[in-house]
Image 1 (tube, rainbow, N blue to C red):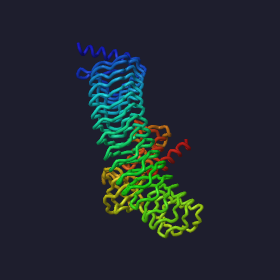
Image 2: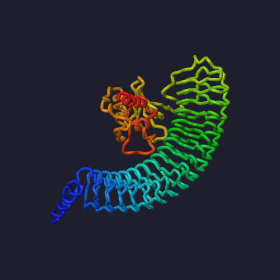
Image 3: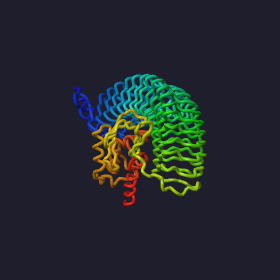
Image 4: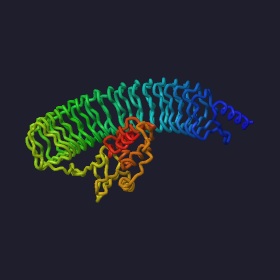
Length: 519
């Protein structure tokens, strides 16, 4: 009798949708994705298992059956669904935007992302586990449950949330821009970025570690905690910050324009650029480490410390500086327009252009042009390879054990001795990627793609490597540091944008420019 009932259910389902369900061990299942858009279906059978994704957007369905299992993603956008059943299992993401959902069941586990943007939901259940991101933008959420675990990012922009729970774990980024939040919990660890722009935050917890960027623009914050580590950019423009803590580590760039900063701390390490233009800064510490450009335009700087090394360009336009220090090394260009400098030191090294307009210097014959790959600061070695600035832990022959600035993980860097470099999580991976980089690669499968062609993140990494010869670890490290939102698919245009400045990015862009011209 039970088999007959299931047979009838299978027949009716096929008549309504065109799909044939299978019966196994007394339960219904479908071995692939099930796309029911436009079918007019109003209900699903109990105990249904869909091996891949289930698409219900645009259907008149208003409720879901008990014990529903979806192996892939679950699309409910624009349906009349207001609640989810107990024991729902979703291996991928759940898309609930533009629904009337008001609550979620206890103990819900979502393998992918949970998309609730713009819904009337006001709270989340205890023990919620989400493997990827939670998007709560423009909801009425005012608080989060204790012990919430989010695999990647947490989006809270446009919510009235004022605080975060204790023991919150977020593997990716937290986006709080424009919320009324005023404080953060102790022991907060953020694997990705922390966006607090235009919030009411006044202080940060001690020992805060942010793996990505930290954006504090437009906040009333006036000081930073000791032992702060930021893996990517630190944005402080427009804040009341007047000083920085000792031992501050910033993995990428530090932006201090439009602040009242007057001095820099001891042992400051900036893996990217340091922008101090038009601040009240008057001196630079002797132990400053800057991996990319240093912008001092319009400051009160009158001198630079001996043995200063700047990995990128050095901007001194409009300063009162009258001489350059001994042993100055500038990896990029040196901008000296409108300064009082009348001569160049004998041991000056500049890797790119010298801009000397308006200062009367014409002889640059003694300027060295061979910028070292390995820099020395404070008895430590630092290395810039393929656009990634890292601290050298140890070095033997063509193998470097490194730690990317602002990151905890130990990685490896190898070279062929002829200008080719490769990063890897292991020495074996770095060597394999170096062999890949110097080998011939078949680019033919990308020849018919356009700027609108889409790829997954993994496919994008592969395409970039094949076309440019970049190493996989270096490419992932670079792109992930630039991503503000992780998507399921990226267009070629997206990839060109995100890889700008990465190893051989112009080669990647040129490849598709040529394809457009030929087509």
